[in-house]
Amino acid sequence: MDINYTPLDNPVWYSLQQTHHELGVFYKDIAFYHPDFCPFGGVFKPSEMITALSEYSKHTTDFYVVGTSPSCPPHLTVCKELICNQMVLDSPIPIIHTHTTTALGTEHHQDLFDLVNTVQPGYFKKYTCRMGQYYGIYIDNILVAVTGERMKMNQFTEVSAVVTHPDHTGNGYAKQLVAKTANAIFAQNKIPYLHVASTNIGAIRLYEKLGFRTRRQISFWQLSLTH
View 1 (cartoon, rainbow, N blue to C red):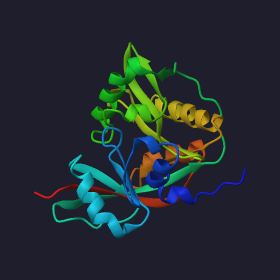
View 2: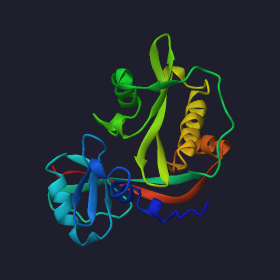
View 3: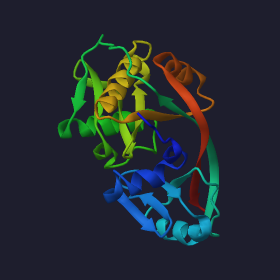
View 4: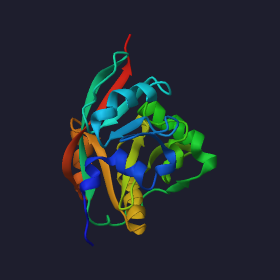
């Protein structure tokens, strides 16, 4: 299969031009996810950036520009640059089935929202669960680990929300759920990719053991209202 990886250089923009177009808020050559889905924006041409950031900030007070370093209007401040490894998987992962995996539906969405925001608060919004399929592991009827799909393009789908409750780490849940999610993406004839903080060495090693390779580093610029 002939793969053009260029869209991964600007994953928010291309996701909102392609598979997730209906989830977007658009300002000429800048696109954002609606903040109820995902607080991410992508820039195709930066000339209208200040106007676009100003308009989007009317909808949410805390969000991210992915890739391009943002030029901010006076009422916004770049409060953090999160440098991530963008990792790509080239082939399916051998089946890992140690624990029962549940495909999370509408009836599980509150459990999903609560778990992710307990472990990684701030990224997972009201309708993030609608961006793709999520999978989880329940222990004693309590959701303790999840992984799923987030940004989607015609040829690529992002693996995201790799989360295990702190009381249940070390049991191989993340490994099983990442494999489940990635293989489901391959079954859709798409390529799985993910973003992980460059300082998260443990997670990077796990992904490498599963076959992911680092393609590039990409910055997530966090913007907030100036106090």
